[in-house]
Length: 83
Image 1 (tube, rainbow, N blue to C red):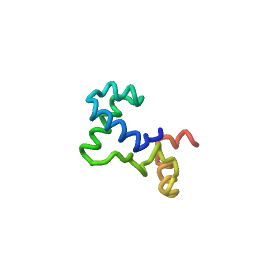
Image 2 (spheres, rainbow, N blue to C red):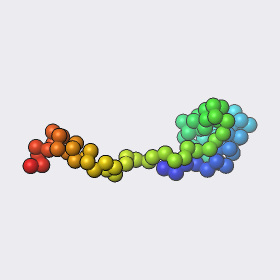
Image 3 (cartoon, one colour):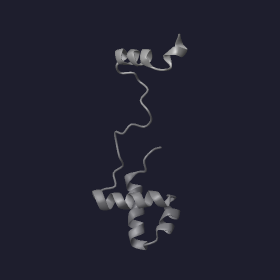
Image 4 (cartoon, rainbow, N blue to C red):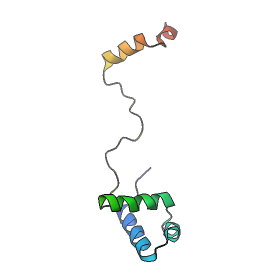
């Protein structure tokens, strides 16, 4: 899922601060209530609304140590099924 634009986050927060109505803000900006709550908490705790970057999305399936993987495969309880 793509992160929301920082400008949209700022506009939504500014609208909420002006109106004081979370439900109305979420309806106008087409956001879920938990999303708005997370943005408000992030602004209060971190002082910015920048989305997280450089995080892994999904599981890394790449084997990085082939020898360790071979040893795991031989010692695995599933190895009996492979022979």
